[in-house]
Length: 227
Image (cartoon, rainbow, N blue to C red; front, side):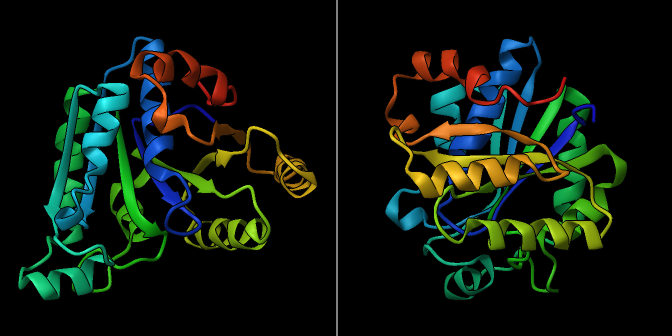
């Protein structure tokens, strides 16, 4: 499939490498001469200094990087918002802002919170629902661990997207080890045989690279990223 203007980056779980994959996609698109905005609907963990937008900006230097709401505790958005005593933006508010960004950039990368069905607002809206709001202009990239258990988690995420008739660009393996073992190699081969494309794998420790080195390597990591 052709790469859509809006790419929603989701994961099979938290901590699978969504932010680094978002940065790598940004860098790969920059290498192609595309302009990129990064949008994070709900950023939690501010009390610990967490900022996925800041990390993507450091590694890949998108034209724009912003969060819809910033929450203090490193928790899912709804309980974090309850502790902060703030009201989360509705999905249509996020969708409107994403469309505004899309009008001024070749691509907008939207990074979710945790997995696909984590609630982003007080009405139970998820990243999957946000994809429905955005329609044909958007498609998903699923980031998965290469380790044991990933086949089930990845298949469940892809099934949830398919049941909602949401387009999928492909799967990226995050934190690919320097020396992969039999499990990682087998999982990669299995996912590569599925109908949904395997776009590539981002190496473990990629965030520790010098930003210039990170940007130079990104296209090779994501060799399956469509035009």
